[in-house]
Image (cartoon, rainbow, N blue to C red; front, top):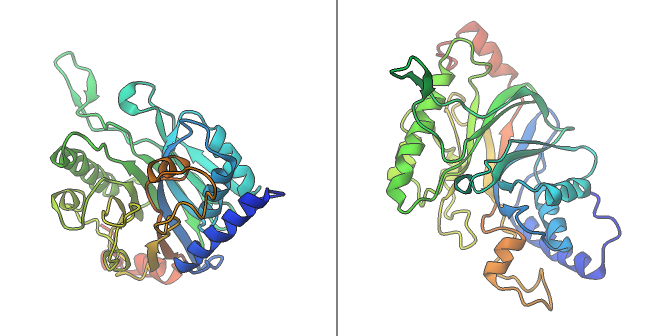
Length: 323
């Protein structure tokens, strides 16, 4: 981390933020053994300039992890570039294009990662919706995601995997989210079982706007076998600032019998108090969400020492979880 020569005000704020981070009990990752992976919706990141101290706070939060799927990155990447400078030269980013119309909210997806801990292995794409042949003989998409998920492949230790980051549209009512969640679950399941898929180890993460575990929305995205790790299910709170909603999720196929997930949690940078991070500033909770975010990062620690499982897949593919 390279916060550099910051003002006394920023230094005091960073000390307070570090106290809050410490209370989140995020274990250190170990090279080639474990990987700290997170998903974080950073509200309207790039829509308008954030305060300098806010960018330092965002960098400090991101720096607690090795790889972060970030939602709500906007078309203007200026603030993201500043955050990457603070994180230092080993930090890299992958990001999707933005949708220019009002419906897409000019949003993109991003993966921010420490190249010392994890390697990008080549796949970066938005999923193609299934196409059907129309009366004119043209193949056209059967549906359109409001905001396309973003796919990227990575490797850490002996574990190669594909991440899919999604941000499901809020809509006018919760029931409108069921169909896009089901379509996403169907697309992933179908792609995972194709002969030439690059990797079947898929982790789906992001902001699904699911209020609680086991409601109709959660059942929609888990209809084909995706599940949340026991470590996340066991959390007694969500990842919005009030910790009352489970909007953010990390899901995977349970081929590792929960050996994949070592630990999990939510990093609470809010802690119910705005003033200690912005002393002497008139900062309402709403303004605070536009300086940092209205979401807290949801994280897991992955076991990336996966050689034993790979050998089992070679010896007995069906038993090891391959289809």
